[in-house]
Amino acid sequence: MNPVLPDSSGERLVALLSDVLGAAGDGIPLHEPSFQGNELEYVKECLDTGWVSSVGKYVDEFERRLAAYTGVTHAIAAVNGTAALHVALLVAGVRAGDEVLLPALTFVATANAVSYCGAVPHFVDSCEQTLGVDPLALSAYLERIAERTPEGFRNRITGRRLAALVPMHTFGHPADMPALNGIAEKFGLAVIEDAAESLGSQIGSRHTGSFGAMGVLSFNGNKILTTGGGGAILTDDPVLAARLKHLTTTGKQQHKWEFFHTDVAYNYRMPNLNAAIGCAQLESLPGFLEKKRRLAAAYSSTFSGDGSFKFVVEPTGCSSNYWLNAIRVRGADRAQRDALLTAANEAGYWCRPAWTLMHRLPMYDDCPRAELPVAERLELELINLPSTPALAERLKG
Ligand SMILES: *Cc1c(COP(=O)(O)O)cnc(C)c1O
Image 1 (tube, rainbow, N blue to C red):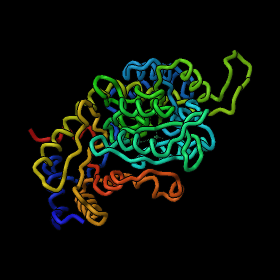
Image 2 (cartoon, rainbow, N blue to C red):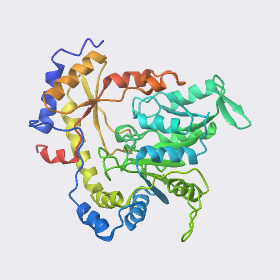
Image 3 (cartoon, rainbow, N blue to C red):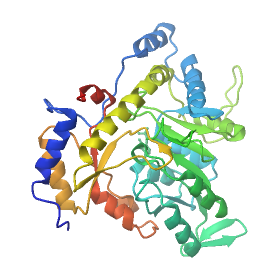
Image 4 (cartoon, rainbow, N blue to C red):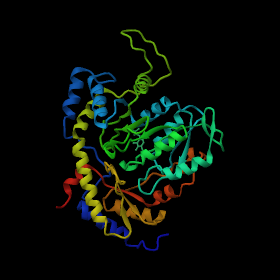
């Protein structure tokens, strides 16, 4: 498809990666965790005291520190980001038979969490600048398909209620939350941010995950901060916070010895062991962010002179955590993209494509969707580059 993408592009990509990262040696992974702080000390304390499971001081401490760091009043820790998304959607009022709007360009967990509620994912297009949900396209689309009813807006084609919007901050780059919140308000949609990738990213001086009614984080092993497995929900609403805590802890009523449960709820609470690692990782987060931004700056300047590859930079007015660095290969088709991925991986630089778009997955191929011209182009053009913070130490100069 791309007449200007030369056959030697694979060699060129490897040369540029080598300029930034040096020789690949035994291979440079896409993203590795780093435990250089108090992780061992805090975990040992859990083991020594026996507080290893879903009750313990580190869970509460991790929640306090997360809330303080992101500027919200409440953080509720969970076993993973997917579980956190699931309960956030439930608490937002998403019910079986509803539709939930989300980007086609996302990790499958965003759509799966909607399905766990018995609701139907409804895919919308992405924006060139942010890689997140495109507010202009979304607004025009909803004007066409949304119909006001006494219970809120519904999809006039399927007849199902439009319950919520789940924007996702792709690779850590913030979606345009002020604009998306405005559209959601107009169409009566609850907003849950999938901020799984964007801890440390800000729009202006405000953290991603704090713009919606709720924001969801992930601390999986490949994220900027890891607890092994883990997630959290951020909110400023004390009623939602209480409900989230209740539903993630089996719906048990507080009592000294009696077991009384009020709902079919979930065992989604983060164990103390994982939270102990999280507390130590949060102490290291400013250092991770600084290294990631240095690595991104090095990629940016090295790739800037190239006609075929465009390094993805943070949107205007935003500060990104650069969780996964990415380039766009202008006009690439699937064969060209895969040839580049093969060349980079064979040379030891672990590069990856963006996710297969949600509507191409077998379980989601009959879900409602908008026109997706930008997402479909991004799917072919995006390539993620090695992004481990410690790689900043290999940079020349
Ligand atoms: C990682 C991730 C999740 C899910 O988090 P887990 O902790 O792995 O369950 C959800 N959404 C996005 C966009 C993610 O990248």
